[in-house]
Image 1 (tube, one colour):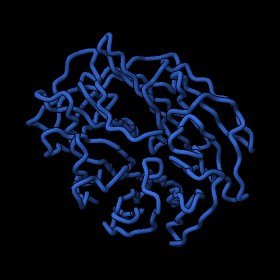
Image 2 (cartoon, one colour):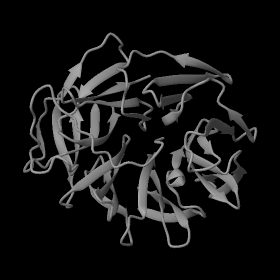
Image 3 (cartoon, rainbow, N blue to C red):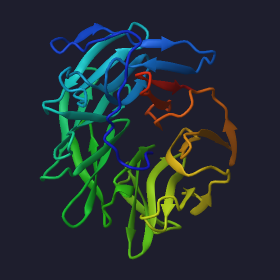
Length: 351
């Protein structure tokens, strides 16, 4: 999970020059694959001068990119690239003159993304059926400021938060039926808790009320919600994985370096401080029993939990990524930029 919300104006170059075909849906891409000595590590340069999020499903890479040669700051297209054949397709093109297509999520059946203006005054969550190619709108901002944030996809469901005049709402949409419902509300509406986590048919979010912090778990099959008190007033950027709720915890949101990272064991109903020493966390995420950190020095640490014990995972990734996250398939994706040499790329670790 990302420590603070950003609109990612990231530039990404090619080993060879590629132009996005504005008038066609498929073309050959110069996506460059650099072979490594690690069979589970893929290093790729993506064909765009600007991009946001990428996700890999099988051999397909889905990524929000710049397709507007007149405005390098815009990320106005969602494309798919076959990493083996290098074939590229434009799946979606924003109508905004300066757009940010971001929060790209995908699995075997669906692709979900957020399309907003670069100034954030309009935001829409879109979905696409991968089998039929049908694109449809899931939600949109309903006021002069963005109210729809950060969709998360899992299975046939997508969840997100919406801001309101008095309180926030947590939304859930079943993509096959297109039915959306409100499953929770938030008293506090801050950057730290506008994210939700969706995994294993559970939607998880955090909130703060009367000086206390709380974790919430909505169980999709039963439609029931559980609440547990957190060890600090502001539990932030919560991620659910294998019965654990990982989060950063703050006593005061003005001092984000004063942080406590740990996890709440839902079965034991007990909070545990992460036992391995680490730096100040700028980004973290968790999936399939693994946790990855990016600290203030640009160092990446990866850990795995077995039988209640943590061990370090060593991977020979490129140093100093901009940020990291796990996609829906459990791939760890790390993004890089070297402005001096005008080079941008990503590492994808597949376990």
